[in-house]
Amino acid sequence: MARLTNAELLRRIDDLEAENIALRSRDRAASSTPDSDGVDGIPTKELPDLLDGAATPVRRKHRRNWSWTLLATVLIVIGAILAPVAVVASWAKVELTDTDRFVAAYAPLATDPVFRAYLTDETVAIVNQQVDIDQLTSEVIDGITQLGTGPVATRALEALKGPAAEGIRTLIRSGVSNVITSDAFANVWAQALRVSHTQLVAALQNDPNAAIDLGANGSIGIQLAPIIEAVKQNLVAQGITFADRIPTVDRTITIAQSDAIPTVQLAYGLAIAAGAWLPWVGLLFLAAGVLVARRRAVALVWSAVALALSTALTLAAFGIGAIVFSASISPSVLPSNVASLLFDTVAGAMRDTAVSVLVLAIVVAVVAWYSGPFEVPRRLRGFFSAGVGWIRSSAKAHGVSTGRTGEWLWRQRAAIRVVVAIGAAAIVLFVRPLTVGGIVWTLVVAVVVIALLELLQRPPVDADGEDLADEDPADAEGPAGGAADVVEPSEVEAPSVPLPAARD
Image (cartoon, rainbow, N blue to C red; front, side, top):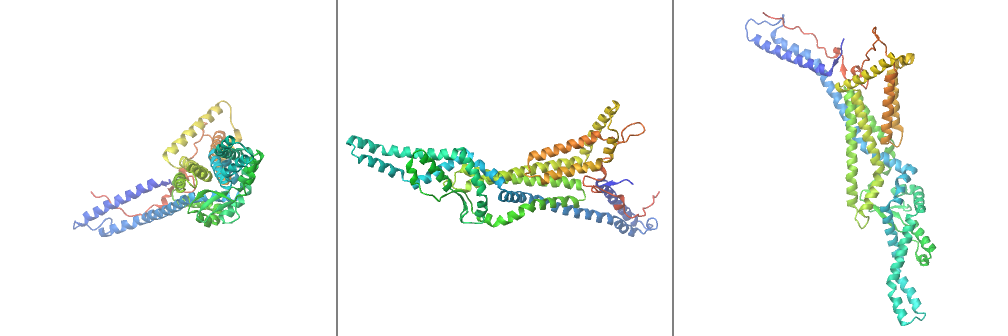
């Protein structure tokens, strides 16, 4: 018995309703005549109730379908909403537990011109606060004049106090810049990041001994003591001996300030715990929504679309967040260009992950649409099958055939497709970090393998030597398997009802 699609089912329901209306009209017309005793022995007044009873199973089936559709929609929406939270939680877990990833993310700051300039300005300002250059210069020149210089030389030396102080300041800035821009500083910076990775966790836990200080007002600062000590040694090595007067400085520079940072401390433990399982929970909700749907092919497409939309909104939120972050910090605390740089450094990994998830969602949506029981994909698959069949026929005409290997591939084609799909899914789910390149290459390799399978397999032939047409699995089972997009006639056939005989 042929199967009925949902469209055919709805059309038959409409036909039954139209016939019901016609019978009701005929009943009302018959009841208006005195000699109307009913139809085929059935009293006229009982016909509407009997017909309503015949349509009841179909209506109940329709209501059950809507219930499953609503449940699938709710599950898919929840999974899509969890996607942005999963991206942030996963990033937090990786950054706080993977030292190599942490260093790779923040080490480039040492070579960025914007951050170098900011670090140089802050270090020079702290050195100038600790050493009174004007007083130091004045003491040196006064000591010279006390040795017995003449009036002219004394006036000349007095006039040199200002330029000499500026020259010393220039030397200090040059020494600081040489330290910060040197290759050795980049290496020290990377090593310091590696050593202080645990200090970041301590800062989130509000440890007072942390190298990264987290203030009660929501400010985050980096201690400059190691950098100033390196500058001091560099200046002394250049012959600027007064640099010995620079004391040990326990100062920090503020790199961020937000009232939400104490809240981040409270959420630290949750991020560590949720970062491991939250992505899987979101994926589980999406998968459950597809499995409970009556039309799984459609549900798979829409779940991928929902995930893509959610991820796109996440990317938009990152763009808005960069603007808000820069605007919320006073320029006196942190210049806007440095604030933007720091936000991009922090959010870069999350943004890359979100882009990868967006690409993955688009790929899943396209693949699900192409393999689904839709009209256009059917034609595309038929066009592809016809082209592959023509290539096989041409090769066979020239004596090229895969023989028994091709026959085995034909018999095992469904299993091989499942293996390819599982392998591609495993790569995407378990290989980290998730990148756009990895997703695209996985898709390309899977498509090439499936295409080669279609080309190398050898289908059975009919009496005329032509390949037998392969049944499109999506027509009978759908990409999710089972009768997801079709229903059996036994599920919709209404109880038989005696219909009125034709009257002359």
